[in-house]
Amino acid sequence: MKTMTRRELIVATGVGVGAWAMKPLTVNAAGDDNGVSRAAASIHQEPLINASPQRVYRALLSRSQFDRISGLSEAMQGSEMQKRLAQHPSQIGQREGEVFALFGGYITGRHIRLIPNSLIVQAWRAESWDPEEFSIARFELKASDSGTRIVFDHTGFPSAEADHLAAGWHGNYWNPLVKILT
Image (cartoon, rainbow, N blue to C red; front, side, top):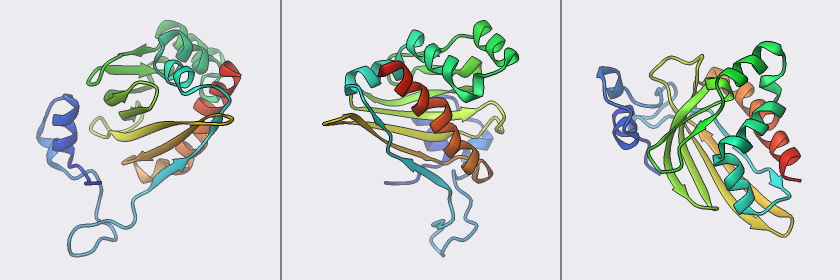
């Protein structure tokens, strides 16, 4: 898979191009002479959800179902976060190129690729990141005897966020998803 420059990502997602978009997505901190980084952080998880790929896909792209996920998530616990969620319910476009805003607007981005009941690829960012920082979140839904295995990969995020994000996918996505679908 080719690493996209910020310009390529922005053009592909239609977010808009500014001077900042020319910077590469990854920093070549420990790279070779070809500019290949061997130190980039990434997350790979494979949660198993006891529901069909169709139900999982719908839950991840349905505003009402995602609001239920948000309400059960670790991040939205506490009165201030619940208030934020009530004031800013999830917004989720249904087509490639459309935007989404989740968890009271704290997570925003754009759908890059949608294959119904099979694949969701998003340019994804947290509100606390620098405005030009977007990562790629990829959810591949694979039917199994026990339901759906989500082959999940998250790349291109600020490396200092790796541990927080890895735990966050469990507490804010997988655990609540299990609760609402099983």
